[in-house]
Length: 118
Image (cartoon, rainbow, N blue to C red; front, side, top):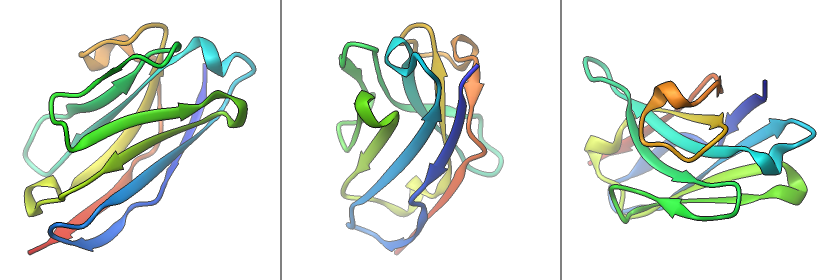
């Protein structure tokens, strides 16, 4: 199990950029894939971006880029050109492999709120 703590959320204006951070506590953090999901009221949680243990990335939206610093046990989500519809609680997750479904991730952070004003 990996303990994850997100930070960096807040209120931003549309068109802005924001970077979220995820601090992980694990001896073998470099063995884990990391992902970012988000959930807004009334909607299902959805994948935003993911990064494999070796640095391969996936994102359904090019405005969101996952990265990691294994030496610091940190994961990041760089968000750009933010829109009001990006408003949600953003969660980081860790699992054995990069996957597009949340069931493949075994550890979750508590979430951080991102609000984008128009």
